[in-house]
Length: 121
Image 1 (cartoon, rainbow, N blue to C red):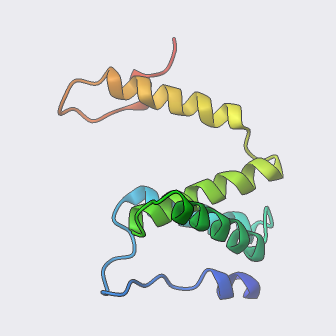
Image 2: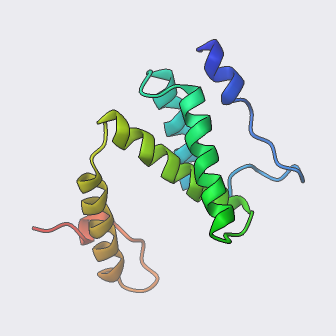
């Protein structure tokens, strides 16, 4: 493990000793950020800076200071850094979001949403 990444990506803790993640996507965002830093796609310092910018945007926009807001900011920070690195294109994200939205709308109530329900054939 990269020594520098240990400083920034240490164990996550909450004030009330709750689990750090309420939803799987939150853990996935953090795991992807850690893996990208490990691969040198961006540095832990870049991650910290961009995450800080996104958290300040939350504050300016009146978003609640809660776990959901934090991980939404983390997702935006990850996307920003991946777009800047050229490892991810905005068009790719937009296309996938459209597929998931279509899948959600095409899935009967109570059934699990599967991406295949939203993919153009």
